[in-house]
Image (tube, rainbow, N blue to C red; front, side, top):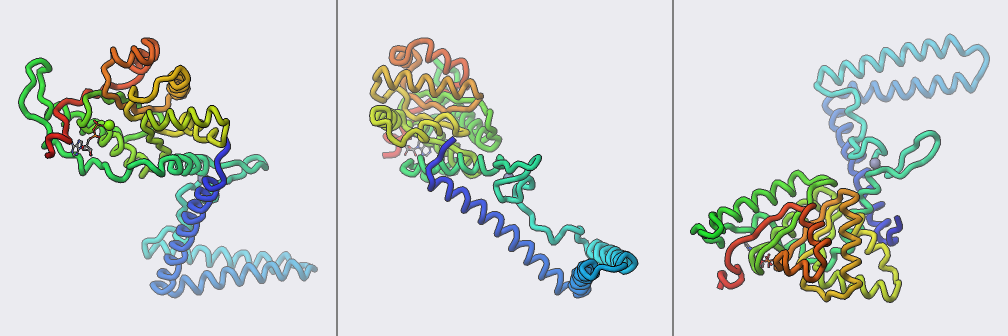
Length: 328
Ligand SMILES: Nc1ncnc2c1ncn2[C@@H]1O[C@H](COP(=O)(O)OP(=O)(O)O)[C@@H](O)[C@H]1O
Ligand SMILES: [Mg+2]
Ligand SMILES: [Zn+2]
């Protein structure tokens, strides 16, 4: 998969920051322990001096075996003293080692296996997250959170047709979405948020996006109209938007807002169908928001398309009265 050079750079910079932080923290721990237990510093110094002496002896040649053995025994005694000393003060013997976030590659992004250097999954994930971030730059992500979502806007009176009140229904949806964001995995289920305008569909999907991004996943939020404009442009110009298209499939979570309000050319319909299909085959979640009924969606996107979504996504029916009007 190709990414723009700025995506590579951002990902590399972030890994470097992680590594640096782990190493600085380790240095800080070492200094603190040195001043708490001065003998630790002495021992470390002697152990390293011991190593240097052994190396010198080897270089000198001749019959060095007895001397090396003596140094090795001395070294083992000191190692043991160091370990015991640390333990009796409540530290593990690898307290001086940096705590890298990725144990596999030590936050370098690469590891060796059978003599080959491979790209670590942590770097791959970081690249996806950075590429998504770049695509989201113009999205209103930061504005909507779970904490700013209030249930006070929803009527507590029961709707006799539905057998529930908007308040109860929306409480359930809010709890569901919070839990969804908290437990998000790469194969979480897809969601279909349905309901009239102004009921908080965009708000809640952005709140999910925020939480999931914080966990380090790659999330793309796109309104269907702007997505279509962008895709049609790149289709006709065959420009550098290839990686944008790739991310629609590669991202860990894709959110398509206002499905059905875009321009419905044959091209956009089939492209969207392809994106959804590819993701479903890979078990990658999508969140779709729409103001339209299933019937209306079918008219635009064919029955097959809509039943595909229906069969693969959990439906959340938003109830209530337009919050933008209630607020006034
Ligand atoms: N429960 C809520 N608490 C606070 N603000 C809300 C709530 N629901 C919606 N809003 C706000 O009302 C406006 C419209 O909501 P929005 O999420 O765009 O609705 P929808 O996507 O369903 O049309 C937005 O500014 C949103 O932040
Ligand atoms: Mg909306
Ligand atoms: Zn790694």
